Image (cartoon, rainbow, N blue to C red; front, side):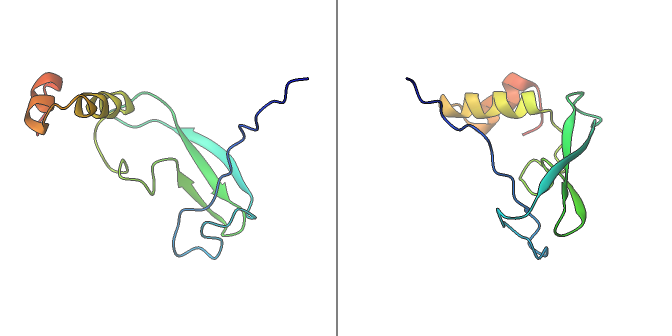
Length: 97
């Protein structure tokens, strides 16, 4: 008999001012999606039941407030991993440095 791996993700509140900050005991639920001007890929909103507030999937990451799409950030990361510099990546993607 083959055992299956547990692939469930544990969500936690990323807001440092929340009383449930990074607590795995806190219940986090999905709370709708939103679309940005630069990316038509829906982004997930979450609700922190312990702290009674909403947050986005990028709200507490380095991608928050950036004007690129997820695809552009993925391409940038791949090009960087192949050793291309910032200027070369900007040239390939036709973006400002």
